[in-house]
Length: 157
Image (cartoon, rainbow, N blue to C red; front, side, top):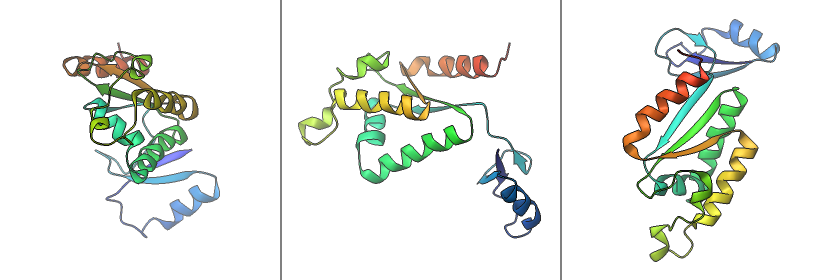
C-alpha cells in the first residue's frame, strides 16, 4: 500500500512507524496534505494542461521534462490512482485521434519539434503503459469536465 505523509511531519521523529511500514511492504511518500498527517492517495486525479503546446513540451520537449512527466504518470499508477490529463485547447482537438493532425507551431522555427502524429503515438503508448487517460476540451468547458470526472470516479451524486 502507498501512504502519503504530510511534509510538515518532522523528519526523524517517526522512525518506528516508517520502519514498520517499510518492513511490511508499504511505501511512504511525503506530500503536503491539506489536513491530517497520513492518508491514502486519491482514487482519481485530474492534471490540466493549458494548451497543446504544454502537453507537447511535457512529452516531446527536453529529456528532463519528458522524464519528469513520465515519473508523475508512474507514481499515479503505483498509487492506484486513476489519472486524467485534460488538455484545454482552442485547436479543435476533442479526442486523442485528432492529435495526429495537430500542427505544432514550433515546427516553423525548430524542425526537431514534435509533430502531431508523433505526439499522438506517444500519448497512446502512455495510456496503454501507465493507465493515464488523455482528454481534450475547450478552456471554457474544463471546470465542468473536471467536476464530472471527479463525481463519476468517486460515485458522488
